Image 1: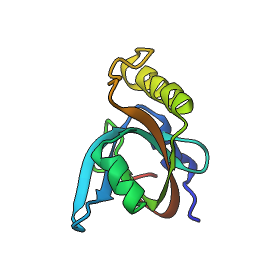
Image 2: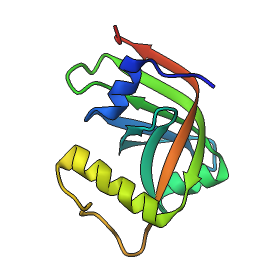
Image 3: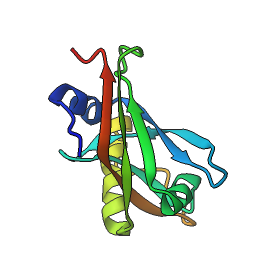
Length: 134
């Protein structure tokens, strides 16, 4: 397993947006913006079932997450690995509230859809690449 440096990890902990790439059933990439987090070992983000990211990761857990510092779009950290889905809805709701506080300063999260179930995604780093990280 690859490990993030302190400066790479800090990008995921600070208020920087990320992009996640999953693999569609036809093999093409699906990329979306996300709120990101880091638990000391894994890159973490939150999604909902039955969204496309969740469907893709259920079928094929290979994933890449990239984050840029808000003040320097040319610097980045890219983490490629295998996603684990934590479908404990209570834990996932607490996590999306934490992310909402981080990114919007609002708790609880204001985007809950009653037709969706929150899911935590943990990405175990297998490859870490970065640029401009000092």
